[in-house]
Image (cartoon, rainbow over all chains, first blue to last red; front, side, top):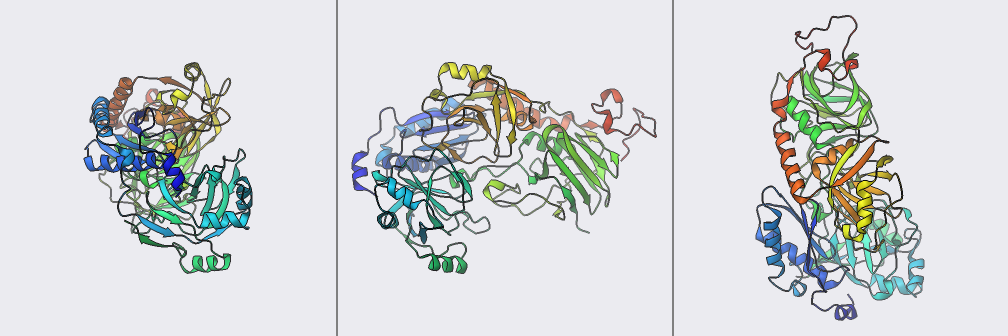
Length: 257
Length: 340
């Protein structure tokens, strides 16, 4: 993670945040910013944990996105005004932007084939970032990124933030289909597709690690707050790891607190 | 012999569905479940069983089925031509399906999604708390010829020959909406135009979402495509790059970056789901209080379904679809017991 970025995002709320909004009849959303910053992401994770800890009976589900905490509740069991008052109290109870990261985080090393036939847009993305392909591969495979949120599809992580030169816009023309395990890049983030999808992000790497394992004891291996290094792996070695263990495909992890 | 449903043929969009698996949003897995949950409740009321029982959802086309033991069944949702051993049977009704008899369910006649319920429910192995196929997430698969689905033990018997009047929802109409999460990305005039516009349900519709074609110009949000990805829920009306609204449905992704102008309240989602291609849909903004009242009424209505189940009396004046009854070769009597 870039120190320069952290210095540019002070642990103070942006103007007008945190902000509480209604999302449909049974959803409430507390946002900690209108764009991704590391403190806003940390705030969203901590605020979700705080709502879970309150254990309000009427709350049916919570989740966090990049910069927001969402809760779904039963509006017939408790009026909106009361639920919103509870949330407002919690929002002002502390400086969420200075909250620590969750406990039980892990650092994953996931074998990745960068570029080549499996990930045909590394060179293009590198050029847009002002690098040659070898430099991009070295930088991206050596960068430890954090799982900012899990969303879109089961177990699918959004990771970041990459340094500013990776602030690449999404492509206006969609990639008609990238396969499961595609590591794609845009707007200083990486995401790893759980299943085949069209995307406007650039396909820079390929992993075989399975993000959703419906029949496993733990179907969702990655959690928000985990950190990941996408280790540069030769194609042949990567194929061998995938054949030996289709779920993990050579990925390992260690606890980081 | 163990009770099983044997599938001889199936349309392209037949899946096992129930009320879905809420609680996995944080893991990126949406609730999923039946497109028309009310149809599940209606089937459960007919068969006198919990609405959590899994049924077969049939998009556009049914299939040919058989059971290994006598089973009471119910048909709800979008009306489809149905026959047992060649004899037409009524929709929104329950029937006895004898072991070995041939149940044929044809093309949809009104609406989009039909449901075949079986006493005891479909008893496939639950995954993360639900039997519902969630094809986008890679859970389960479409039903196909040769499948044999286990059935649970019936909660009650003697439920054949009953009917229930469905809430009308099979031809489009008006869906009530609340302002969407990014409603303020759209000018007041755009929101007013949204509420005044007639939409046609596009051919492009599936369990993820229903695309709508506006009769006039598309809708444009101020912030365009730059908003930060945020949680999405079924019912959200997102506006994509070409300005056409898209109502997210049960199998939608859990986050999305397109602005949402409105969100359809849950009681009106079956109406959106069941609007067939070409049907007209409109949206009307309601206040939060009106939305809460609508939800309370919808729950009361669902709870009252069992009391509205009545015998399938063959009085032509009461039968909405005479073609579902065999008029040839017999005198229709209002007093005859249902012939099952």
